[in-house]
Image (cartoon, rainbow, N blue to C red; front, side, top):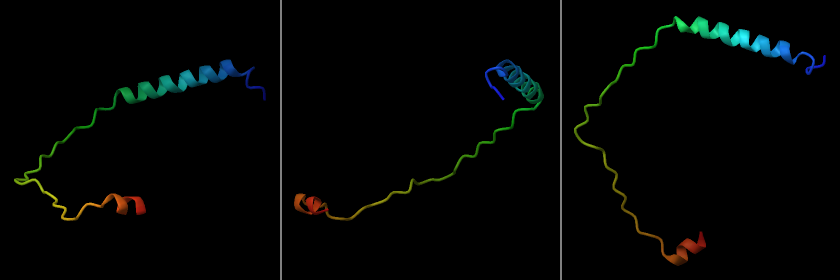
Amino acid sequence: MNIAKNMEAIFVAAIVIASATSFATAAVRAPEVITVKAEATEMPTVTITAKRLTAEEKAAL
């Protein structure tokens, strides 16, 4: 089957499918968005207690 000869039919079929789906989804209601707010009073913090690597140690890695 030569696609070049059937390109017009493929294009028309794609337009028909796109139009049908746009009309089918036009009547669908938009979903409701529910927002939930966290009631955290303190922000968790992370404390790192480690020594920094020296230049020689970094080079060894």
